[in-house]
Length: 347
Image (cartoon, rainbow, N blue to C red; front, side):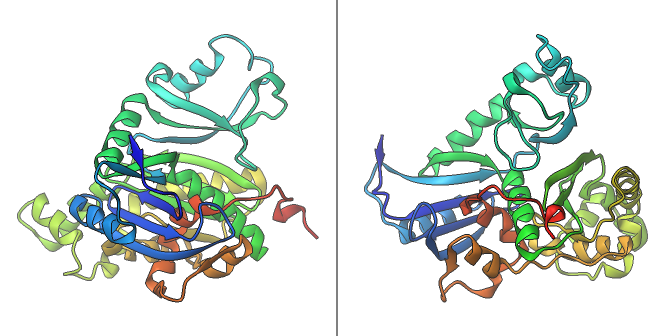
């Protein structure tokens, strides 16, 4: 295996709908983001051509990159452990099976501190709240094979969800925003919901409502002949769905309100903003619809300002369109964070 010279840094954010590729002046900060490109996830030819243009390679060589992935069966959940049982053989497997509904022997899993993302040490377990994160073992192999096929060798393979959560928590500290944000990662059959504050990941839940549940509503309201026609229209920019939005998000909203209500009762904190950083470009209107129904604003982060606080700057040639909230995961892969007090602890 041959590697291309590592004179630049490369970062790939690969979600269900979009590929984001960035080239930086160095592998770690301080660095300059020199270029950001976007492709459809299935545009393998576009990605290959971009890699050739961004750094020509010798035949048979691989470009080393930090790769963020977002597989459908990823696991990112905050759970509460029983510290009296945490060292029992089989206890963590029990948590995985009963609370996460997964088979632990078929997954690659890790425990992290919910406040700073560092690895949780079971031998010195003193904190009951942890993040359990990971993905199915077979998907690790599939993802690695796909990256290698495209000419990329993953220096680090990371869940984009964690990069988003870490970046957002640091951003809330940077801006001294004390109210937590609701982060939604919507997919076809579910929505992964996270409540994030400057103190880290506060709560998580997988809601069995996603894009697929909106299609029958579109079909009924527009009197379309079948769900396939409704799906094509829903995924296009050919119709303005904003007037129909309350109906489309009604079931999802009911579940979100339940989760938010429980969190607010438990903590006394109210959600201050909503952000949906992984929506397909043509469905970005859903972010405004959900925020409007919840009665809170959409978080519009000042990513260039935050990046500068992490010794990362954007080249003047990087367009404004490459600086919006959908790049939070990509930029989160680049940032490095010192440990610091949470916003709620600051005067």
